[in-house]
Image (cartoon, rainbow, N blue to C red; front, side, top):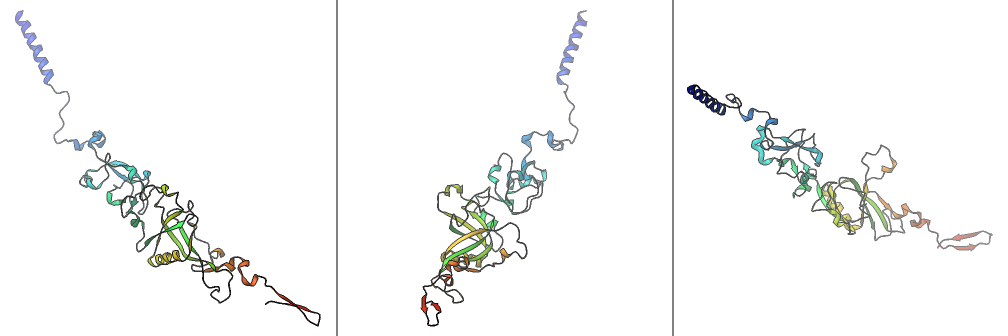
Length: 296
C-alpha cells in the first residue's frame, strides 16, 4: 500500500513537470519571419510612415494640408529615408505653402527635393517662369489697390505724369500738361508686402506693415519690361489696374486701347481743351448795322 502511494505521488510530480515544460503554442514553421507578416499585425512603432500625395498635385502648385497624408513606407524605399518626411520627425504645418517642383501622383512619396519651403532663399525665384525677372517697387496703398489686388493676380500698369511742354505730339496747344499712359499690360504680381500666397509669406507676417503708407509690390516681367517699369516709376505716379481672369471677347471696344496709348487731360475733360475755353472778345459795330465780335 505504501509503495502504491509513493508511485502515485511520483506520477503526479512527473505530470506537473511535463506541464511546465510543454510549450503553450506550436513553434513557428521553418523559414517564417516577422517580415512575412502583414503590416497590420506589426507593432506601429516598427513601421515607418512617410508623407505621400493624397491626390495628384501639379508642379508649381502650393501645398495645402489636404494635399498630403501619411502612409507606411514600402521596403524598397527604406534606403531613401534621409530624403523623406518621417512621421514623428516632420511638422506638417511647416510645409504649408511650399512650392511643388514636380508633378506628384496620388500615393507618390514626397521627398525634400519635391518641395521648396517659404523660408528657403530660392523660394521666390522658384515661382518665376524661365527668363523672367522680379522687380519690387514701393507704391501708395491707393495706387496698389491694397486689399483688392493679391499675389498671383495679373494687372495693367498706368503711368500718370506731368510734362514740361504745353503742346501735344501734333503740336496743338494743351491747357493741362498731365497725361496718362498704359505702359505695361498683363503683368503677374509675385508678392505684395512679402505675402506671396494666401497661405505663405516671406520674412514673417506682413500684417505688421499695415501701418505704413506704402506697399511693396513685386512684379514678374521680362528684362526689357523691367527696365521700362523702373524708369516709369521715376517719371510719375504708377497705378495698378486689376485684369479679368477671363479673356476679353473679340471686338470689345473697351479693349481697343493698346499698350503705350497716351491720353491727355483735354481728352478726358472738355474743360482742359484750350479750344473749349471762351476768350475775351471785342464787339465792333460797322456801318451796315451788323455787329461782330472778334477774339484777341
